[in-house]
Image (cartoon, rainbow, N blue to C red):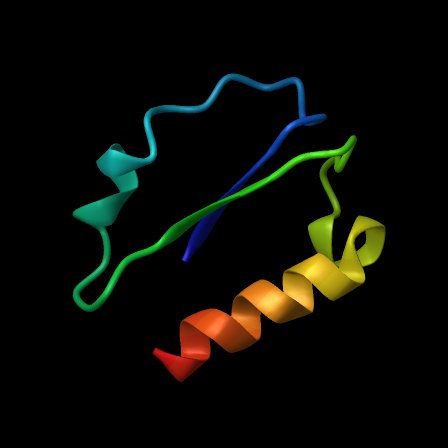
Length: 57
């Protein structure tokens, strides 16, 4: 899983460019609402939910 956060401020390549770096299933998640560089600390519930959902599939 890769993630994109809206308050990072840094440029990022297209999410699809990361997919080839994974040998298994790939999923990209977008987090918004002012989340910055520390996703687990700034949005712990959303981060945990995404990790559980990706792990369950």
